[in-house]
Amino acid sequence: MKLVTVVGARPQFVKAAIVSRALDRRRVDEAIVHTGQHFDANMSQVFFDELEMPAPARHLGIGGGTHGQNTGRMIERIEAVLVEFSPHAVLVYGDTDSTLAAAIAAAKLNIPIAHVEAGLRSFNRRMPEEVNRVLTDHASSLLFAPTQVAVRNLAAEGIAGDLVIEVGDVMHDAALFYGAKADQTSNVLGRLSLRPKDYALATVHRAENTDDLARLSVILNGFAKYGGKVVLPMHPRAKARIEGFGLRIPANVLVIEPVGYLDMVMLEKHACLIATDSGGVQKEAFFHRVPCATLRDETEWVELVDSGWNRLVSPVDADAVARAMAAAVGTIGAAIAPYGRGDASDRIAARLSEDGAERLENDPQVAR
View 1 (cartoon, rainbow, N blue to C red):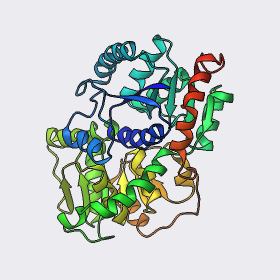
View 2: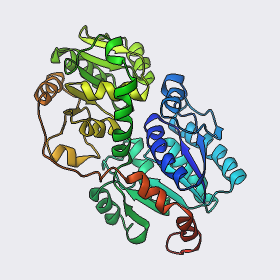
View 3: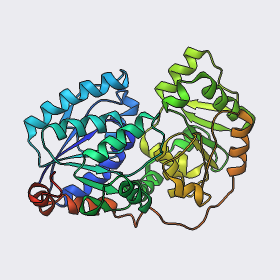
View 4: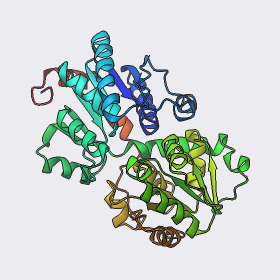
């Protein structure tokens, strides 16, 4: 089996790292292509180093432009790589511009696409990520769904049968594997003079929040009204917008540079609360049994809201944000296990092994 994996953003590095380990155990010939969507060293290279992920076979260096600019350039460059490597399949993750670009490039070359985290839906087409994931799902030949909800979403769009495989969530695998490693190697709490459960951890990066002056102001004011210590690893987009809008960081917010994955895991595990607009961080909060307040109008991970582990708060009122954060501290949700048994990466690798390659190439229902 000859496989090209395309990644470009930090959450994808984590997912690909854990799946690549499983692929290697099955002797799948994998070439990793890094689009460069996250081009800052702290947002990219440190993840490859810490996760002990194979070095990219190609680094395309594309990032920093608009969605259209990035996606267009990526399609062109990825197409050239696929022609060069001639893989049996292309493996993509999640919902970034890199994901959609790889799917389009592969589809135009009639190369089967395998999509990890298929079937997630926010049902908000204003989100670039929602458009990316819907289009990628409809172009894919194998759809690895993390949950039953995702399977039902795909079925509602006419995607079902042998195309869809519920495997569980690879982020669960990563939380188990790298959580133990972080305990042994990360000293981020000591470096920042933090005590366990004495701080909230926040992440803000989505364009719908950072590019909107009103919403970004509400989030910062909400942190201020919450009053407790808030640790904020500053995403480059958020930093640029805060400076551009002339906003002030509240006194109770400790701004730090983006951290590596293992340090982030430690910060998550020992926070009393996580406030985020990240889809991946919502799940990581649940994996580490930390309550979460999601700073968005909707979430793809509805099961976490239904079970009480997560609560949605639209960032349109600072008092509401502060109340949601305060109310989340100390809460314990229902005992649920919607994301599988921690063996999603093995199940994906098994399907993409030599048997999987033959099926992809010869099964007319799959290789469409």
